[in-house]
Structure formats: C-alpha cells, structure tokens
Image (cartoon, rainbow, N blue to C red; front, side, top):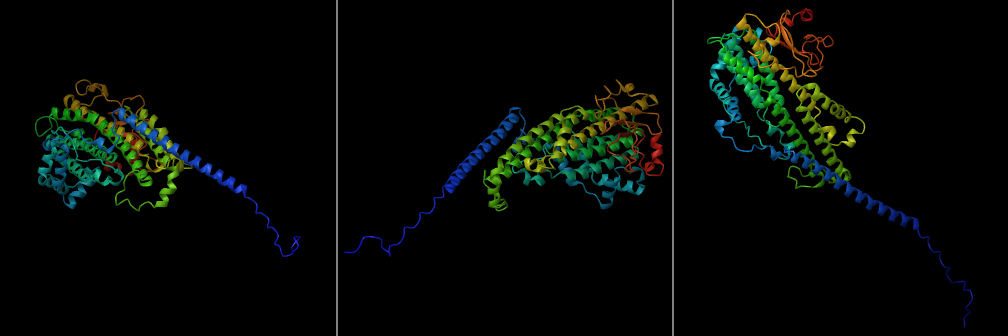
Length: 500
C-alpha cells in the first residue's frame, strides 16, 4: 500500500483571486445615476413641453395667431376688389430705361438738380406707363388686400417666397413719386396730389403682409412720399384746375392722419415674427429629435451623432422658445403704445437682455435666442413712430398751406389751424407725454420738428459735429416748410445757417 502522507508530487492549492466588490458597487452606482439622469431628462423634457404648450394655449386663448396657417385670410377676396393684385399687375407693367431708373432713384433728395432733359425723361415715363398708373389709381378704391402670400411651415426655408413683391413695389413707388414731382414742377398740382395719394395708399398696402420686412419696406416708401410732400407743400397751387382742390388736399391730410392701418401692419408683423420663431424652434427640434418626418432635403444635414449629443439638452430649446414668445408678447405691448418713450420703456430691458445674450453664458442658456431673437424689433418699432411723426408733420404742413392761401400768411402758432383746417393738433409721438411738435415759422428756414430718437429738443439743428454730417438719427426729425434745401446744405457754411 502506498502511504497517505504528504506527497511531494501533489500540487499546492492556488489562492482564490480577490472579489472586486468595489467594481460591482461602482457599476451599480453608475447604473443608478444613469437611471436617475434619464428620469431627470424625461421630467425636464416633459416640463419644457408643458411650459411651451401652456404658452401656446395662452396665445390662442387671446385670439392671436401663432401657427402659419392662422395668418390665412378668413375669406377669399374677389380679384376686382383686391388692391394687392392691382398693385402687383401695375409693377409688372412698369417699364423704365436705365436713364429713368437713375433719375427716379437719385431724385429722392435732389429734385433741385434735375435738368430739363431729365424732367422730359420722367414725362416720357409717365406717358408710357399710363396703364400701370391707372391700375395704381384704381387700387385706391378696392377695399380688400390679399398679396396671396400663404405662410407655411417650415418658415425658415420659405422666407424668399413670403416676400416676393418688395423690390418691384419699391420701384413702382419711386416712379409714382417722380411723376408727382414732375406734375408739381409743371404746375399741375391737381395731378400731383392725386399721384401722391396713390403712392401713399400703395405704401400702406405694402405693409399689410404679416412680416417685418414688408413693414420696413412700407416705411421706406412712406418716407419717400412724405419727402415729396415736403418738396411741394410750400408752393402748392390750390384752387381752380390744374391747381389742386381744397377737397383733394383735405383728403390727403385725412389719409396721412389715418394711422390705424400702420398700427395694424406693425402688430401683424410682430405676430408673424413670433409665429416664425415658434415654427423655427419646432422645426429645429424636429430635425434633432425626429419629432416629425424629415423631407429628402433634410436628410443627412445633421449627423446622427450630433442628434444623439443634442438629446440631453433639447428641452432647453423648448424653454428658450417659451421665453422668446414671452419677449415677443412684450414687443406687441410696445407696439400698442401711443408714443415712442412709453414703448421704449418696455423695449429697453429687452434690448439690454438680447445684447447680453451675445456674451458669457448667454449662448449656452439661450441656444436659439442668441441667434434668433429679433433684436431689431426695437428699431422697427422706433421707425414706426418716426414715420408717424413725419406723416403728422406732412399733414400739418398741408394744413398750413391751406391756411396761408386763405389768409395770406402762415399761422403764428399751430393752434390757429383748429378747427378750420385740422380737428386737433396731432402730438409728437417721439416725445414724453406726447408733447406738441415745435413750429418755427419765422426762422431763416421755417420748420416743424419732432424731438426725435433721443427725446431732446435740439433746436431743429441737423448738423452732427461728431460725424460731420447732416440728418444724424439721434437728432430732431425736421420738416422744412419751404422745401428741403439739400443743395444749399451741401455747400460750406451750411452749419452756421442751421445754427441760426
């Protein structure tokens, strides 16, 4: 028998490897943290969507449009009652030569320098575009406005389709104002006033689509029309034909003081801007999160890994969208104010906030706001009130001219225009408390002026010493009662004349 004792050939027992309990605990803890983060992400996404939907519901409850389809007209307008279609057709029919284009573009402020040959070219423009001019005239009597623009999602991809009429309509307005100026020079103010009324109606109609760019285009056209009035009001011939009739002039005054279409246009533009911001946010989330089917054009534009990387923070986009809509609602409140200082009280904190978004953590906390927020909204609202100021001064200048023709002199003060020529003196919309415009009838250059953007009475002086230029935007908005003296202002010593 073999011995059962220790055997030299027997293998020793190997030690048991340590159990890595810390690794198991780490994995369990990591799993719990991951589950917690997923639950937190789910709650954050749910809360962000709840806030967004609540804000949309509040807007809908107020009866305000928020989705692209909400801006469709409630009913179709017959073509023969649609002023927009008549203006589109007029712009299509308008034909001009290169020489005429240059004249009508340059004559914005340089009518005094136009030569007789150039006036002949404008007369030729009027003669060869009689049908287009007649269409613009007929548009004034048409009650409906539908540019046949339908806002559809995604708006960010269809901006060029939304505003197709701005450039041709701007060209049409330049032609109208040049024709009005020519009729005035030819002492046919009966025709001049009617063409000015045509151009003013066209400008207001142009601001009807619910888009900021259309409103800005309309403002530019209105500024051009007011400049034509400023050029001709001081020596306007009123009386028997071919002079303008008092009824014509009073009709133009009433149209200048009818500001509701402008207010409606501005409000519609800001409502459209808010809808654009919401639609853009939802479109971007759709690309990132597959919330909606992608079109073939969208596929592949955002890499899949980028979508995965964006997943944790996409609720931030919805929360940012809620904030953007609230801020645009404040802009709408500013649009409803009756003067710029009151509107600016609302807009100034927003301007400062939007400026801060471009610095520090603003880009992280507001992923859409820092690039999409319309920080130009404040400027658009301010330009709206500036246009109101210019229109009111143009109306008062025409009333002053009627007073002068009847009584052989200008009124010593604006109050003399009431009630025979104006129902009331319109206030300066750029001033605190809507103070009256300043009227200086006995100066070397008689003027009406508004305190302008800075709200200060700078004495109607247009010279900016810092920039060595005239018409600085910070200064007063001046309406020359003897016509704009651009040629005289362009020579040395003009600043001294203004200082007097």
